[in-house]
Image (cartoon, rainbow, N blue to C red; front, side, top):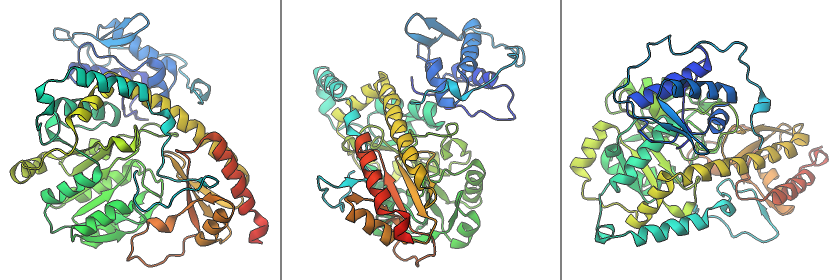
Length: 487
């Protein structure tokens, strides 16, 4: 079972009651299946950032009412509920007196074609790299052997153009549980990377589109949109993301956004701005939001935030996801969730495009997710990245007189902005002279936009570095950027 996305509202009453009601509803509506294992109380409490006793009490009540059962040394499982009578609202549980939540209960701990070669003595704070030492090689090898041993002639047939139905079913359940995404397996299209899916999307949306993008943005997507002969326009942003009033004036009919963790700014879009975007999309027929949810698995502060698609009631959000950050870039498996309206267009005009992912790879990934290996891998990598993230913040503490640190709530990189007028070019050059590679924010700005007056800002990625490399690299940067040089 994956971690469970539950929207805990400040005005929604006691937290344990909200957890109880959510899980009960998921069971009675068939979204949690009979025999399915729930997240452990410890794991769910950590994920939702609530007290362990809060989850224990909710699970206890669900067990007492027969919705779930506890199996010794194995965890909680969903019971058969076909003939159950639901407990009336308001009668399920009594309040827990003196309920408190303490921080002490929380546990502490691409493939890019134009990247220069790394020198052995250069420490590269790349925002693109991940920790490949954590890849579960033994498990992947075992599942590869199993899939091939169990294979029949069907495995080597062409397969479904949207991807194997069993994999799409597994992905749909994972997305609903972890990101709150509401979709059927029929709405999912599996492809070899987001590049292919965006190419396919152009065939679905047509070639007369004006795409609005935040600036700076993920330039790979920008160049792909430009290759379609789309008109691409930059829309101003603030601390909450794209400014909807400016979007309205841009003439765009489609918006590409990364609301859960914008790249490269690291902004997490709040619910108010998300609702503004959805209202904008709903005001005119044919408007769509492309939500790129590329690394939502890695969040370090605050409660988990559901996907923008989870709040979409009018079928305006096209959801893109990938396993590149969560597992490995070489997996090359991404997926797109189409609104029902666009699904009909796809079936009518794009049915002849074959799936670009090997059925063997699809089978391995399906078993990896379905059998719980993906959940365990994510839990492991969250701890690894959280440890590196906290190390980075601790090492940056003495430098806060010189820099403003941002983007620290999620993802695998941080941003440093000069407080004393130092330019990006100066920061990058001084780092390079000290044997460190950092990445300027301007590298991610759209070509036709004019220069701005923002302070020099650089990206520091930590995903692919060891703790020793992080410490050594930060020591070099402290020397390279010491205040005397700015004096």
